[in-house]
Length: 81
Image (cartoon, rainbow, N blue to C red; front, side, top):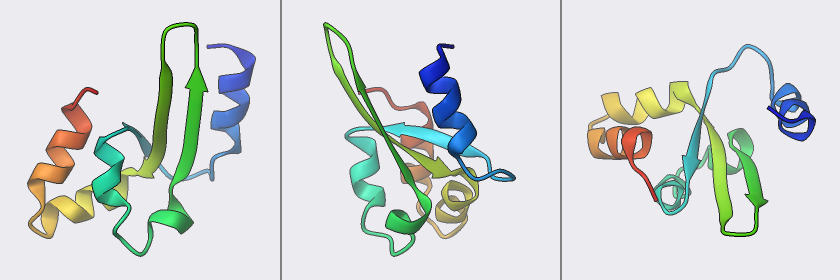
């Protein structure tokens, strides 16, 4: 892992596990009131692509799953853009 990514990960609040959710899968999470306060944007690019994603607290993903939204949880975890 390069130093830029390591520094970014170190800046996340400690004691919380995060899931990196890529576009377009994070779009359905933006409707929740906690999204702006608890999720951390991550964007990068290289010669071939632009990556847009958010670090989302794993606890929130489990919460969505237990509240009857298993498609959001599973699709976001295993989905690929």
